[in-house]
Image 1: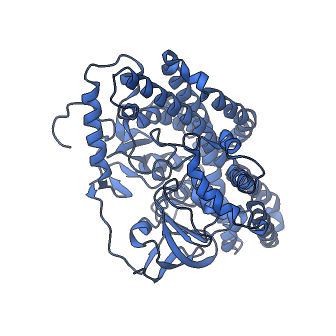
Image 2: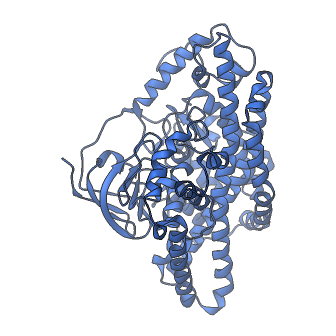
Image 3: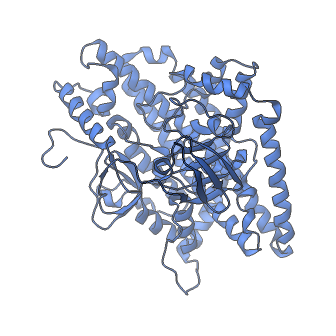
Length: 536
């Protein structure tokens, strides 16, 4: 990996020596090593989307909209095939609002509990912060209207663009790719803004609970919302399992999902619906009392009880402010999950265009196999085809394999130092963030890819590296969750709270410490997973 490279490698950026990075949050959206075409889809569109959302929220000026040439100044980058976010950028950005907001983002996004330097000075709002607060408050209604007016339209657009007739015109696949990137940038910009408000609201709600002496209510207040996209997905899969609808109808609505669906080279449910059948069989064996809707009703009742407890402790003078905060937290937690789902529609259209183009190039003898396309970039496959295209594929395949054999740390400064992937010595416990309350124990099932693993037996403890929306149906039968990567507002944490499963997230090493068959105790209140007995 050193020396002169024969071809461009877009999977390993070079950072300045002092920039702090983390792949903790990014690994949830981008598990494992990306392929060149996948990162080509995301890199600059994602940078522009994130910067655009910060402009919308008053945290960046219009002059800061363009993606910087220097990697160290960007929102995100990629190292050894792993996507990372700039901690420096995030801290500097949110410090423009307040130190408290910057610290909240460190906790919710990166899982960092010790963040910005403490100061005896009050967290005074600057003129910049006051303007950002005003602009952010006004933008909340814009975002609510955006999702109301566009979510269904993007869903219908996805259905149209992945149809065989849309993909049959091989001459138009390049335009379809660009259209998908444009749709992604637009939806991702709205999603980033929505996420920012959701995360800030979570932090403010947490502070409120602590201030009134009810810190244990934080996670209960954001559970049992009932009408999230993931709840709908699980209800629809339940309907398939109990003969109320068909698998084909389910895939027609949710087929853009799949393990690691952010990676264009992954196969989603519309491409491999049979992968869902074992999970459907598990759902079929559950009774109505264990259905997603029944679980949601129970969690909703607990949320309302927590709400009553909170407002009994809130001073009368703060009631209206607290009420508005809780309503905003609920609204934007729902919209945050919806936004992630909607922009993944655009990613899937990009995937469909790429696979159709790969099949066309393979038929014409320009590629050895359709999947080779994922080791190229858009200009190399959607424009003029280079005569040395096979050599480029071979070089990048080899580099991809090298990166997959390496690990990089969760946090680093400058450029990460990779290590050879290996298991670590088994300990007796791991710690993380307790993000969904409760204490449970059971048998471990380590899952790396839910599409390739046997579904969990009811009550098993799911131990995984990270999650995305496709994991939601698998959570439903788990007795507890232990996740290596994430924060309090990660997808895994939100869904764990929604379905009432104790969850410890950001353990970093859970998948290496525990083995399938181990017996563990999961404490979702204190963020600890204890090994009770090791499998032989």
